[in-house]
Each structure stands twice: as C-alpha cells, then as structure tokens.
Amino acid sequence: MSLDKWLGKEEEEEETEEVEDELDSKEEKADSEQRTLIIPSKQEEKREEAEKKKSIVSKLSKYLLSCSNSKCQYKKTLMKRELTQQDKICPRCKSEMKIRKI
Image (tube, rainbow, N blue to C red):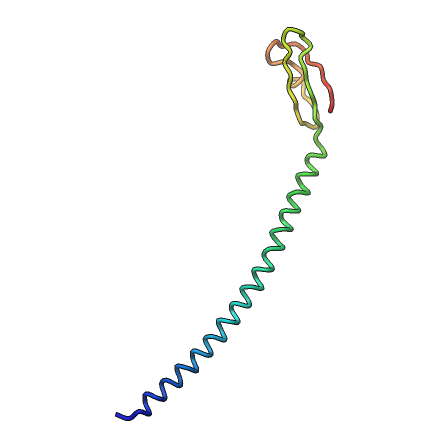
C-alpha cells in the first residue's frame, strides 16, 4: 500500500471542513440578521395592538349607577358607549337607578 492514497484523502477532508466552516459562518450571519428583523416587527405589532385598545377605550364612557331606593343601596360601574334600558333598572329591587357619567 502506498501512503499517497491516505495523504490525498486527508487534504481533501481538510478542504471540505474549511468550506463547511465558511458555510456555517454565513448561515449564522443570516440567522442573526433574521433575528434582528423579527424583533422590530413584534414590537410594531404590540404598538398597533396598544393603539387599537386606546381607540376602543376612547369610544367607551364610564357610568356609575346607583339605586335610587335608599334601602337597596346597590351600585355598579359600567363602561359602554350607550346605556340600555335594562342597565338603568336595579337588578335587586327593580327600581330606576341614578346615572352619573364619570
């Protein structure tokens, strides 16, 4: 057996390892670039959700309802655009409630 066969294979293995290392480093760089791009998009989504919530809350009004019957003293707080007739009636004594917008 000659040593040329073995020496030739070792050199080829070293070359393929170098090529693989270069490819791995390129993939790592691409992965890190993708990671940096993903983070701002998530932040933008969070900002958009916060803006939607603010717009919804700005349309709502807060109402403090208290029962007009002095013995009942039932109170509740609602956040709605408009109160319905059912909201204005006390669930305990069925009398009309006083409405105060906050």
